Image (cartoon, rainbow, N blue to C red; front, side, top):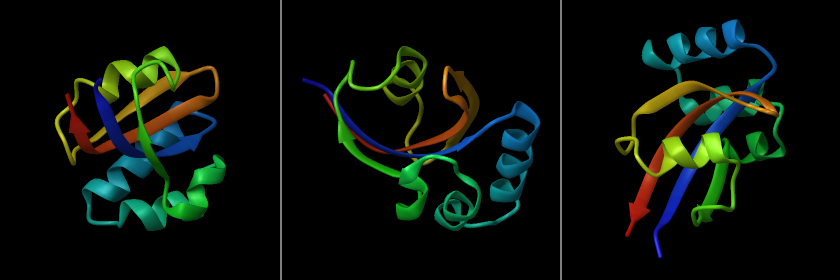
Length: 93
């Protein structure tokens, strides 16, 4: 079964998400941005979600995590929780 490891940043609005994506693209550390801005409890761990399989996260999340290139920031991805920036750090089939 496929598995992936990812980290994310969760914020309430799309503009805020885009602003954080720009900061990261300009060199800000993803984990530091997650710790400072993410509303998810995983923010305390730099946004690290650990390893998970398809179906363990919401559909919109899975679609990105199981198809996006590794180590590239994706998003904003809208879910019922808000807007996410995602970075897939590992994936296996």
